Amino acid sequence: MPTALTLSGSIRKGSYNRMLQGHMDRKLAEAGVSVTSIDLADFTMPIFNEDLEADSTPKAARQLAELWRSHDIVFIATPEYNGGVPPLVVNTITWLSRQKPSPFRHAVFGMGGISSGKYGTIWSLSHLRDSLSKLGALVVPTLLGIGPADEAIDAAGNFVEPAIIRKVDQMVHELTHFSRG
Ligand SMILES: Cc1cc2nc3c(=O)[nH]c(=O)nc-3n(C[C@H](O)[C@H](O)[C@H](O)COP(=O)(O)O)c2cc1C
Image 1: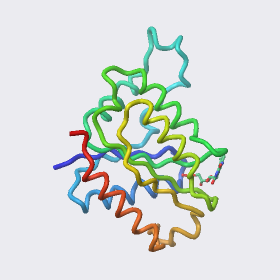
Image 2 (image 1 turned 180 degrees about the horizontal axis):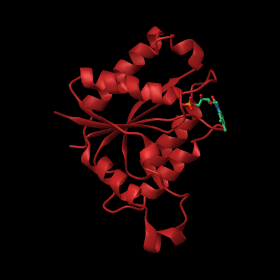
Image 3 (image 1 turned 90 degrees about the vertical axis):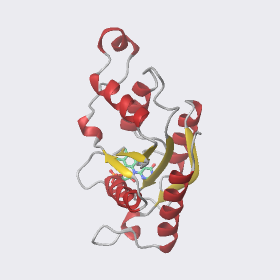
Image 4 (image 1 turned 120 degrees about the horizontal axis):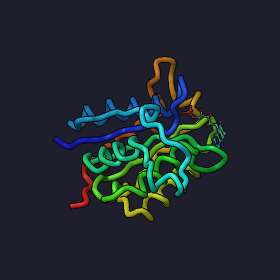
């Protein structure tokens, strides 16, 4: 059975991206994937600074790197801040980029994001894909950008727009069919 690790780049209460993560958890499970859904609040790391590396790489960085190495799929739900990737995601990827062996060269990566704005995190996703690709990650082509959030989700937290439902299905298909071989 394929395995997936999912996470959200927002850890705030009521986060839309946490909802997207939960939605992907359910869709991946329906597709026969064993899902490990984590909360980055459980992997606290200081703001990266090379001085910290020498004697105090955070335990959370080592644990998270091992989780990324040991799953077939990694799905990241990320907000967009100021047209870019939010600091929690950047800091997490920065610490992971310093772990050996690389946590980016095993899994197939997918990313999505939901924002209050109508452009639906496209800049954030574009920057994140660029960064992950430069680290050697295989990122599936679909970018699951969703927005504005208040029109995309109903009161029960379900995605209602047919175009988004199709895109979620496409993401699940790509994540379960792409492979690094
Ligand atoms: C510092 C900051 C910058 C933001 N910049 C953007 C932005 O560039 N584009 C956008 O669509 N939304 C932006 N937003 C609004 C977010 O889309 C919104 O807060 C969203 O709910 C964040 O995701 P979350 O619900 O998962 O926390 C910004 C929010 C914050 C706090």
